[in-house]
Image (tube, rainbow, N blue to C red; front, top):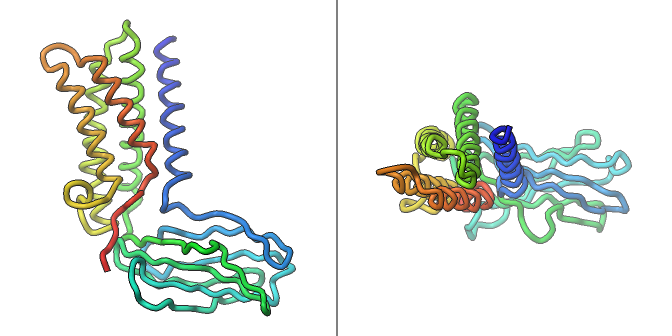
Length: 264
């Protein structure tokens, strides 16, 4: 019964980490609301897109603003001095639709969405542009396998940490499975996903600045150290706890922060 409760606690911690990653990552859509012409407008602006086609930007207007409000996309390549391009968005009923041109894998654009009515104008994202990164298409089975294995690696990591706190439980097998799952999910499946999406197998330390790859490396090294601590007997509980804490800290860093980026 006690072990079941520990598994439930590990699942809760894992799910909490996953939700935090999803809410804070820089590639998840930017959501918000603005007031324009005394009407509230909710928006959802993409910050990641596959480069198989131009990326649609859609703004749903209140029915009362369906006529008389125009939309414009203002964009340029990220971290360049090139002039801004401006495209008019098409009106379809209460929707405004525009398209950002697709970019090579890891290519980024920064853009604004402007709403205009007469002399009134507003930018949905305020003074800061939205940054969107394009990626190649990754087959769903490969991406799903990567996500599931990394999820299991997190689960076993937290469960191993809880086992290390329980003097009546041997955490050795949990530590072994954690190391295996991190290796398979991060360094095999993760490398394949990275190659398909951004054109390289590895872009973290020491070859690049991709923080997701680097986080995987740090977690992997922590669990290798935990395993090595018990090379003659069993893994030391203090080392297991340290590896668990490092894993937790690693996953508190938003996903895709400082991710792969094409240098224009």
